[in-house]
Image 1 (cartoon, rainbow, N blue to C red):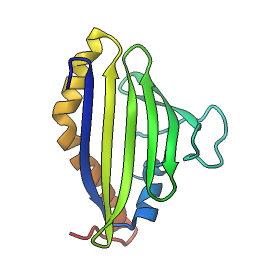
Image 2 (image 1 turned 60 degrees about the horizontal axis):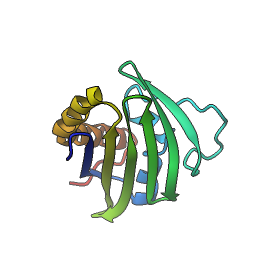
Image 3 (image 1 turned 180 degrees about the horizontal axis):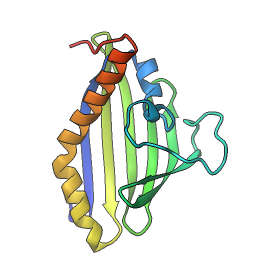
Length: 152
């Protein structure tokens, strides 16, 4: 990690096959498990995972602009996310088969756009393992509620 850039990768387990797990990481799919996630689409999106789809999220007093940069349906999705004046970067989520469920690899490559955002990136990097653990717990709760428990 440089002072202005962090590259983070980790994996979680989801008790669904990759084709189903993938849907939980699309802009609208995250609504099912990510508390407070409420993407707003300036242009209607029939397929919210289509490359070029843009949306906005508001969290913690910050507005982020997101664009779907690429996807392999049922397998991976990549976003460009920018908080104007603060940070920008790529977020990639890839789902692969693992013991009847999915191993989901989540990668963030973020760059601070000003010196005051550097501390935010360092904090995010330090908390990344717990961030992913939170995702894994929320997704396990969701799969249990739909009758598909996480396979351990």
